[in-house]
Image (cartoon, rainbow, N blue to C red; front, side):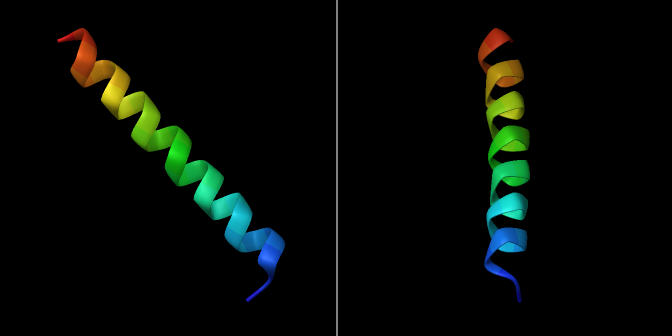
Length: 27
């Protein structure tokens, strides 16, 4: 596995979790 690829995947997951938490916080 490429380190850059892992970092990219982690960033995508972090953004998705952040958006979900933001939506849940709004409701």
